[in-house]
Image 1: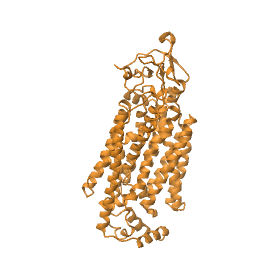
Image 2: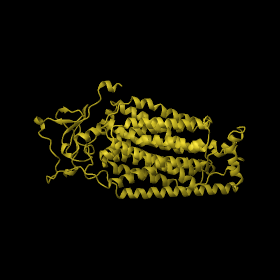
Image 3: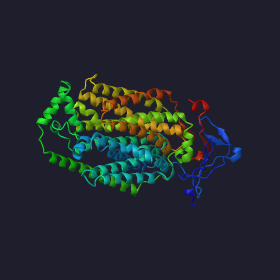
Image 4: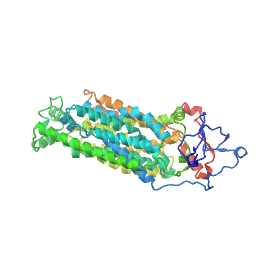
Length: 559
């Protein structure tokens, strides 16, 4: 067999996995009966000289020493993956920002819009374990290419027709296919960073890949309302009893019954109605369908083009590893799953991430419905979402760079950002019930600050979970985290489908689910298993050693 295809590390299925490096490869290895060694302070076990002799450098057939190498193409790979994540997020959130127009055009209700968003977490739960296994065992290329194909196929299916009732089926099928690609889009960034980037750039790379998924969602808040016209306010005063009324129509009805409350918002709506050309319903609906169809074509064309780029060139890994831990074979997928059960600190991160971001992601997708009772339409809600994501992108990358250069502070950064996010969303919720003045500026500032701080914590949590779970693969640990995220989001959206519950509860849920995570963050005991390996073994010359990451002691497991 070609030596370049030899397994990197033999696998030990015992209680304490150990690894012996031979070649840089992602192919699973045969079982290894290794030698005992002595545990260092960093959890790295070096074979005793009397048993295996001096550790030796890895050499090829020509006796040339292989080395660590960082490739410039890593940024192209990261950008291509980031566009995949952004596209999946944008297509998932297509209908939230244009909910009023979609309801008016197709006769949908709030429950129909919620179901279209629900397909994201539903499909994710279906395909999450499969894609975690695929990234771990088959590598990044087949996982990402298949994911991009599902996204492109889902976007194309939505272009078939705009005529009810078939349009409802096509949109739901398209959203389901797009949702199947969610596991790679959400959990793939830490895998990209671990395979292609050195340890000093891992958090930054994870931040870029992660924030682009949110950027796609934010872009959908802007792109949708720019292409699809909002329902004119003057149509709502005559249709408040209709079963197909939009959130805007419900808003006017509520405002008229509130005995003078929110009069400024009501005057704005009346002014808009007096200065808008009234179109016959059939013409208005035809225009809405045409605009929505155009939006579907644009998203499908973009997704297909990105799929072709990824098909042409998107390798699973570089020829040589960028750091020591990238060269070490991760545990077998099933073995890794079993060992995670013994790592309670990892599961604490799963709960923190899954509960808070699971609610936040789905809450953001229905921001238009949350803000409509306050006279804020689709376009303005879209700008709020877009500004939030743009600001989050800058802050997240800056903080991630800082975390890369001042290591071992992930826990405390997460704590600070969760505390700030809780405060910001508390202000937003109080403004919604007029405890705080419900000015548009208050909504802008609270949403932007809350989103920045929560989104900035996400890549930090991803990296922290990788460190706590190591030597379990990054795809496995982050796959579990994002499955938890989508499970919580699924429950959130199912509750939202009930037309009798309204939307006010969503704001309190946001504040509560972020705030409850703060004491859990303080209780968490961080460790940096993967970083320890890189710092103790900075070169490939020291990789031909037995590396052991022990299970936590019984006292920690019981914590």
